[in-house]
Length: 86
Image (tube, rainbow, N blue to C red; front, top):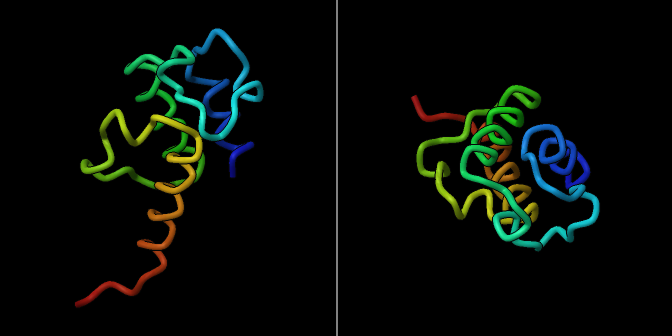
């Protein structure tokens, strides 16, 4: 999943360095991710894996590190797998 997120960051994050040069825990904002870039990465992820980030995840913390993004995507996958109450 980290490699997939690295592709998203390289495609849409507009960082001055390759995502592969950053650890999963590196602060993406310190590495040059702008709020606009974060939104672009989120939209790319939504489109590529057919998920939707809920409003509660639309914040700076959600896109702070690749590890955080991985955890959020895992939460979204689990939520979609749970049966919904009628």
